[in-house]
Image (cartoon, rainbow, N blue to C red; front, side):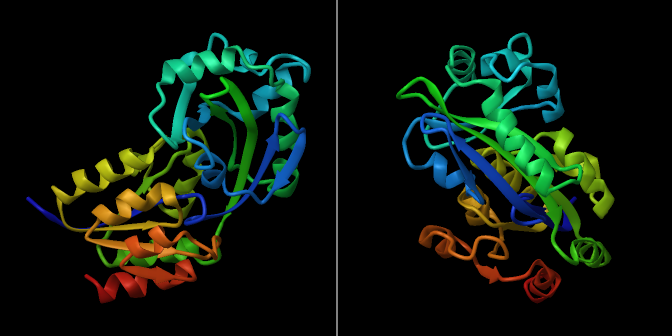
Length: 265
């Protein structure tokens, strides 16, 4: 039996206002306010790899130790969040275990994010490049809910909408979303762009109407597959042309979402 309405939401840049810091390993330079996807699509064979663990575990290591030590013995915790072309998990693990990057590189970016975003939502990961078999960027992210986010979730619930989350982040970092009124059982962690599309397609088998809300290129397939694709540009004010063309509605503030849902339901 069909339920009525499902709203699927991305997290970074959609539910949460993000602050991201990357370190160019080769140059040793710190890049603030980066857009992760743009670093990945610069070259084929790049992928964002996220260890499914609390970044605070970095404190257990010396800064000059190989970055591979973070995952040695914890390989099952490693997940590929998104990539510019197909990359196997085994290949990603091999690259990280052999990398010349140091744990201090990841510490550098995580400490900056933690100082800027003192809340609970923190992640740390790395961007690998298959062509050079190396970790090319260390990256860390922190975030806080956009203003009015809790009220948006409450309003959507009052319409009878079931709220789902599809995110590339780990369940550890997403668990705080329950404070906004989102059930943990309806959160899909470590979701690649293809996985997000599959989530939308699966929900379309169970719901009369499925709405996808996202902000980045990693949401493009899900936006295209949904009955209604809503692009939010609250954080990314210069989205790619292909992203704009994939959306049915574009909003500048997440607080506009309930109105859009009502108009299109």
